[in-house]
Image (cartoon, rainbow, N blue to C red; front, side, top):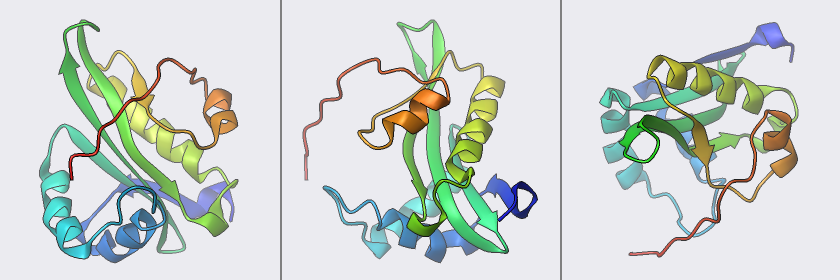
Length: 144
């Protein structure tokens, strides 16, 4: 793959099968179910505060990123949050994740977000190389 082969674009309904397959690679606490995925996808595609990007090489989706911009009180306006970012295991270390994040950052800037953040334990070297810094501890409580 060369940089010219990679296209980062907004996801479309036709990407559903490929994005669902990638979402299943997360496989940590939750196991994505197709019915719930199919109900959520059209809503995310219509949500003006959400951005679902795909990384396409040779007509195939090799990665995706889902993020949001939302208002805050403490940051004097909106901030951007990456909820999910996944690159197919055989396609990592080829610049796909970097390009997905760069595109999301560009979108977040157009929305006047003060910063981009995410919660992850994976690939800290990758995020540090892109200028991200460790900022907080992440707590969660599973409700279902």
